[in-house]
Image (cartoon, rainbow, N blue to C red; front, top):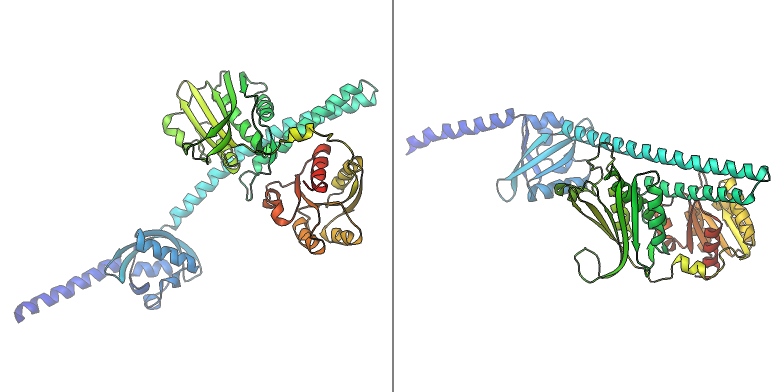
Length: 498
């Protein structure tokens, strides 16, 4: 018996030495961890982190992490899934990306292998960045092309309008040209939303209106100069919806352009709109009333294996596509509390279905039909904006409406003026470079007068304050650029308390 023990002991010791030698020679970092404390690490782990074994032994795992929350996330993942991709801090202060995998020895101890994937992870990030930049480049190029077309229409129509007036020609023709320039500017305003939809705080700034006019106008604009015809089947009793007009026009435009691109040789589209009531969860929407819009083409169709990915950002099967159009549509419709789906058959065509929730309040058109939107209002208004040209234009518009106007270039000046005299309304620009902006000024105004009737304004319409203005104390909102009627309507609602 003793003889056998003498023979076994050297074998066990030799096996343990061999195992340690193998673990030490491994190119992969290996650690024995007990209760999240390093008991032993191999040479590869020391080389990877830059710390000698004597330093790591007895240290908690958090020693190698830059942030405590990341250490907790990695520990939870190793105990759960058994692996995690994370970032470790090295002795020289650098960071390395690693793949850590764990195997339990007992309830308290684990063997963890650590593989340096820094090169792979950084390569993937660079490739993703390049892909996004390329896609954004395609998008920016398309926007620049559209803007140049719009600017050509604006400049051309204004030039012709001035010429007709200077030559004492037909003033009606001059008015028509200015009207066309005005419509082109509205298109440019809508186009800027393509650069803002995916930015932070992209909630829509909604108005209650009918979708019917937007469907027709946007479709005709998008199909100008193409070989595609469109037939409309819009219900007469279509209820109003609460929409951000620029964003919805953008979504419709993308879908129409997508349909046109699916019919390179020309073809026909059908756009329908109906009032529907959903009483089940088949479309993943709450029960209620919706406007159902369908856009159908007779193009090449979408392969079945691609249907689940058509709304993914940067996914495209087109050689010159950015892969952002349908993703933008999806984002816009979701932000409006609606749903967008697609069905398609190869060689037959595709149909996109949009559901937008019905709004029970009177639409903008109904409100406008009940009153003269250009009638004089009157009162005292304080306007805060850092752009002199904007102050001049807004002053002229407000004077037309019968207002007396005071101007402030920043929040501090606005506060001083507000304490000196009473105002029926205050218009505050959100951003003032180098000075107090609208948000800070509003906080101070509320301290001075909790009943202040303030309107927030900004050219950056995706700022979260613009879509949730009442939470910041504002009574209404107006996005730049705006016209005489828009400003008059907003002031009426604020001064009238609606």
